[in-house]
Image (tube, rainbow, N blue to C red; front, side, top):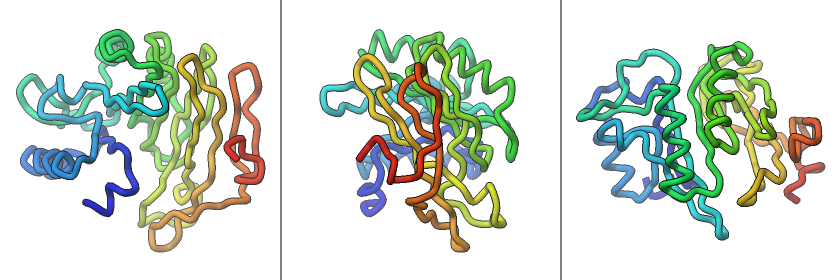
Length: 238
């Protein structure tokens, strides 16, 4: 755990496999994360805990992370008095985003979604939920689960990355499932300033290798189109 902590600021628990080994194992996971001071989001000892935003403060900014699962099975959803993950119930998600802004005084709100069908483009449900979250006050949305990268769009001037693909994962044949994006964003209290993606290609051992010269999507604001930059060479983060 100590060596893991060096590489992580937060852990997202909202996914469709978190509950594979039941409540006892899940609670043990929470205890281990807490004992090693590794913050987590999207899961908890009850529904209220699972839906709490994780606030990270950096350079005068209060950034709120929220996380939800929207892919079956729903059996491991946290309840009023039992542990589990935060499920993407539309009204609750909207209320959580509003609370992150008003109660927790967040400057920038980022929901992270586990959603979409595997090996397919973004679907209507993803787009509907993304728009709902932005209308509720989210500033940027980051998704995963489909095992492939998906579309990147703007809505109301806010960035939506539907799926960043796989990063560390074995068992996949060479192809789209061995490609993931490292998403980077520069933000202020008012807006997203710039963002880019770097391609990580998974090798035969399931480990990511950064493709420093590969072309991948980047952008600044919704006033400018999403473009393709050539890896680190054209990065706005130099």
